[in-house]
Image (cartoon, rainbow over all chains, first blue to last red; front, side, top):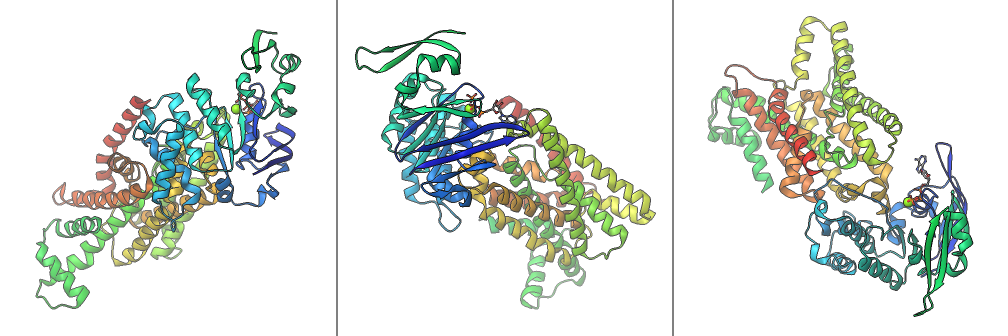
Length: 254
Length: 336
Ligand SMILES: Nc1ncnc2c1ncn2[C@@H]1O[C@H](COP(=O)(O)OP(=O)(O)OP(=O)(O)O)[C@@H](O)[C@H]1O
Ligand SMILES: [Mg+2]
């Protein structure tokens, strides 16, 4: 499913956090959002997820404007993993993942065995099945993040929005989550800080102070000049002799 | 099984009191009244059972269930373990509303009283929310977690304000006799309860249970906050409105009948979370049942604790509830 944003503006308490952001993510594409802290990545993802209504501009799912859709219909196609979401409730891992089935259930359409199977599969996908009965507050940071991702997968979305999904994960799980995301053949928008991970995306967009200043394939966008202007770092860009992929090394902040 | 427990509790509430009435007699009176059976029973016993104790036990059950559910809903939606209708100022507002209606003499029917209480409850809760928003954005909040502290502070302020208003209205406009009656009722009192109150209280309690059960998955979806609920397809504003509005109405009906009873809405949901977990499919019925049984039990205690005297039921629930509340606070800080 194609996800389109048309010149989105978002303002809160006089602060204009998003300025005329337009972007279009094709069906099955993995789109990376890169930018310094506070540049508006999370804000943009919230708008794309339908959690914030833009003041100007609109979001389209295929050709349908999101503003006319019910929250439940949106949730049946879009899943969103927040940067941080915590709870004090005593819930077990499988109960947290089961929340992902909410948009498909109603008082007249109760929980079924299919839902159980979907929840188990989501737990397997993030390698958390062995902890299915653990209590939430006993989990480590990375395990919590994997549960959130499993919850989103249990929503069986067409579009997956991920806000820094790998920032607590050990290197093995970083790679396996990125691999999983790539082979799911969903439309994915993913906010990232690890620029070497961003190289894996089909295209990336650079956020700078609420604007989307550049969009394109990672090799074209992530140049030494760009890294210098947007992030204020000196970097060397190398080609890995083994598989010719790009590697960035960061020397110093300005 | 739960209907059985509830039935036994109501029976106990009917049997135990200053004079304890044997179960047989109660069943005979029930049979006489409900199925027109013709058992010979003492006229006075029959009167006490039917006109006085049975209606009282049923209303106690309704209030307990209603207040416990109000606590479940507020705790789930405000993401705050300390939320309950008493602490959030809803009960205080309802008292003010009910007292204002009583004294202004706008008609003393149960319905007008409830309407007044609902207006007061709505006003108080609105004020608390506005205050919490203002305080929350000052402390850099706005997001659920930071706003949690603000809403408790605002609730305390709101409760104090409305309790003061109630006292003011009473002092200014009530006769000495009215004042005494109202003060007794304010602390929670079931002795004036009759069948009229059952007619109002039973639908309110059942309605509360139904609303909560219907929205049980929405209540679950708030586990990780309002944004997360929205991303799982919950229309946050309308659902919040229906649930909190509904629970404010239930609280108002209960307060207008029996006064502001504290701690039920706080302690019962937490106790039930430990027993059945925090998923609302089980938590809602469990809390309603436990609240009902707890309030019937408290009512029995209030009648027999001091021989020859009837304690306000609010005193009993507070005697049990305050230590339980302290326990919750201690556990919370340990869990951090
Ligand atoms: N309610 C608010 N009021 C004022 N400013 C806000 C509010 N919410 C967010 N901001 C600001 O908006 C900017 C964008 O925030 P956002 O969370 O989208 O950044 P981000 O790109 O996700 O950053 P990070 O990499 O740190 O996650 C930040 O400067 C933030 O301080
Ligand atoms: Mg962010």
